[in-house]
Length: 441
Image: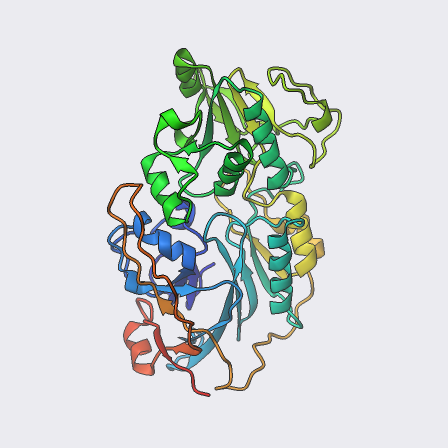
């Protein structure tokens, strides 16, 4: 999402305020330690991780926002020839994706818009129920004019179970190979809950590479992960290093099984004569959980899929895939759109060769256009939480070094954020500087 006023996960010139949904690389392309284009709004967890992702970044640009709170901005209206301001209200919401990931709900003179970023819309967990109630309360009596949707799996072919079910499948595979080393492919951020679940159920530590250990410590995980291979047989390795070639090399030294947790339908394929690559040529097959035995070397093909069944697949002698996904599957996307009934939808994934316009499948679920509404409080009476600048020091020690944190956080004062007329005029071409000021009661 990008406009003359704000940008979400876009980092070019021309906006007055910038919003980060989460710190995955495909959403931070354009950010760098030298980036200085305006105030950057993000979640508290993302702010904690920011220095390790972008060493040297000017942290005074960060504006930390908390899930479930309304915030207010005054920005220069792009439709006005004068320096008149337009009011924008927004609320961060839990995206249930990776640590720090948020959705943004915007309300103002332009109407009401929701940007999901990457998100998972599961129904059964307590966390999901809280998020659902929070979103519906925020949209009470207001029509959603535009939905920017995570359309990664916007295709009926993509059907996979909840992360809870998929995590149990991963544990089953690991337990079936008690004398094997296990390697699990993960990214630099995400899948932490899966690893914690494995550690808790199997009562083992998990190896991660040093940079990943630092991230784990920043997230508060200190007793579960290690960089000492002698302490565990389960290792979480970077996804880019996970391949058939890697697993074959590991098995020369010790029996090793690889697990790829992903919603993508991974499949071994030939690529220029090399079979040691993965592609997404077909979906994983589902297995009835009751028919799976401890002898993981055998598997049976199902007659029909079931999103709650055992859906791991053995594609290679040393590799299993499990549909543990931090993105919503098609059925979850459909439920999400049906619940919100937006007037219009746009997918945030547009460059992938297999991406599909969500309107193709969900256009019939959209609502009708209505007059735009803004928050109904009188001017000067809206109480908005202060948007505070992050004061976070980067950890320069090893992954095992402790990160100093304040023992208590002062309760945020109520305030609005606005830009003065002169400041707007001076900075309109390169992003307005948004300052904290006291609320006028």
